[in-house]
Image (cartoon, rainbow, N blue to C red; front, side):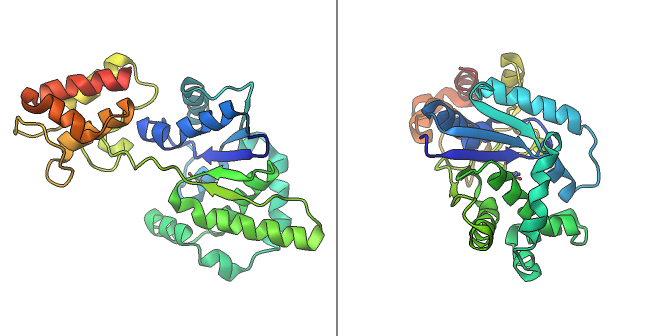
Length: 276
Ligand code: TRP
């Protein structure tokens, strides 16, 4: 573990939820406790890549720190910092920009998708933020970066930049690898993509009562018999997936156990599993 320096980050756009916990936070805590050097970045400058406002950003940064601490990220072992708190990190941006071509930047599929989703033209920042992300990683001399698949083009760019920098100026930066989680993507309680706007996520900050309420309100269907069928029964299946990931059991096993207990019993089971 001592050979690894982890750096990963999050955009502070809202509260972290169960999907974040199982998708990445839990893994960060494991690396931390194994003795890797661990760094977590709250990417506040990245918020302005695809939105026009920085409203609530300070609250979001503080809340994100609280969610991290609640999940077991230990500030005695892990450095937590925000972009805006370390202006020196930006100094890498100039030499790094000199090492990439406009065409390389324009090819990045994640940037293209974000531009389309934003409904805006391609700003200079949106085009170059993956270089800023390379600054994040290499500033910490990070060599292992837990990220989602959409971030792989940025990691590839980081590798390219590090290699070119080392060739030109002498070896300074390590070889970087992405670390993909093998946890399947957790759907929301209603089976749709987990999203704040759908109200189908359980936030890490929710109390046991708030968690129970959110689960109680989630949509199921009129069939009493509980079965795992994500295609046709998204609500029941979303609940089963939530219980499965919290308990380490399989969805089918839980469904069979509840059987004719119906959605009432299923929700009770899910609530206990999540709160536990
Ligand atoms: N772009 C990442 C995201 O949207 C957040 C991020 C910023 C990041 N800097 C990083 C992730 C450095 C890994 C390493 O999720």
